[in-house]
Length: 332
Length: 230
Image 1 (spheres, rainbow over the protein chains, first blue to last red):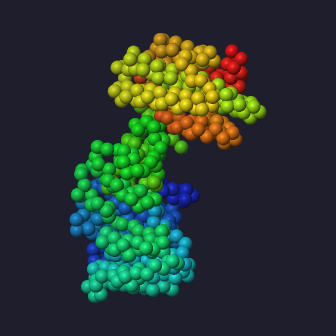
Image 2 (image 1 turned 90 degrees about the horizontal axis):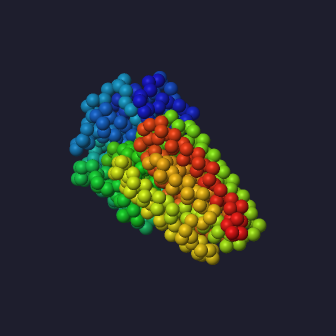
Image 3 (image 1 turned 45 degrees about the vertical axis):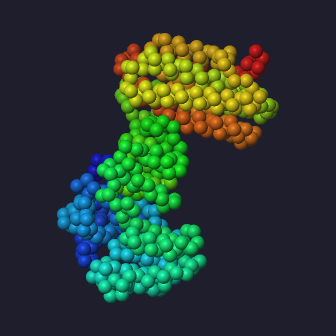
């Protein structure tokens, strides 16, 4: 196994520590819908990869310096492969377009081990709502709850049937109800029919474009707290509209999102937004403002984390450190 | 857990890091044992005035650090990077806050806040100021050792606080514990950044060794007994 500077090699016994960076081989590239490629990643020696659970994502470190997050959408029981699916974004700034145009089978690519802040909670019933490429985190969730014999419903919308990935796989899931709604055939998802009435024994998982997320949020306003679980696949404020050097921080426990401008610290902005974080030096020395990073790539500027800890990327000092990715999700 | 002793910023201590760590480990352990012994004694006679007397040299340390740090900056600060001047001044301000907080705790326990060095704190204070006279880094080494020593006192204090219900003292020392991580890290960084010669390192070691033999003593029950008898 090739070891890359500041990366670790595979160690299945490690349990796939969220922080590790891996040198992966592109085992297979396949067009799975209009504008969507599925990328199968494997260890160069074909060995087992760290385990993951539905809802997990990986950071992909592109050779052009960009870092992108993609949900794992394969089968967690297949230990030698991770699968992601990538939609070519019309406004791509070099992430999805690079993967579509440059990536080749057999090529090496660096990724971070899976992290998960979109876990499936225990429930009697599940309602999954996916829009477009938002099917990717939902797919393994449906597979998982179907395998457990739980009651589930999937509401999956897309522009057209040809643009909707993994339809054949979804047909194979047992025991639930799949509603495949291409917009050019049936119009928009009928959310009112599925979400209009609060169902106390049901949890809702939704991933998709911002209008879908907001529509689902609005209809779940009167549902019990904790029933709705969301994952956006784009920052709520588009990066291109923000000031250069700024980035977005999501507070995982509340789902709140704040923008950190170029010349202010994360800590300052957190405090301004009423989020208290223990701190003392505000200079990257004392380590008391250490915060766990759930997603995104920190840009470390502290003096006290070891180089290994910095490379791991799963914790950061918010008084001085910033982000290399457009967005960080912090355990706050 | 972040280890502030491993702070980056210079290589001036590389040759003596192991010895410094041994000194610091030793003084932390001695302070922990002294604090445990004090609270074992306090368990038998939980008189708030005794706790106030135990805190008195600690209050003095806080304000003496303020005087010392400001003098350190005045005498030697312009040989440092600006960020270190700023951070030393920030530490000084935090020490002043600690003097205020510990002072309030002492008063709430019926004690009197010291406005001159208490007899039991004089060896500590005199050694610190002597270090300042000797070498630009010696006082920093001495207070770094002293600040590190205090970390041995926190857990026994918090456990005793839970037993005896002195919640305000615990609250204050939780804040001090946070700030002392900064002070310990800053001291180590400054020493590593500006120690260049063997003489510098010898002075740092001398100061640390000297403080190792003093810093823990005012945490003992005997120190309080002597102060009360005096």
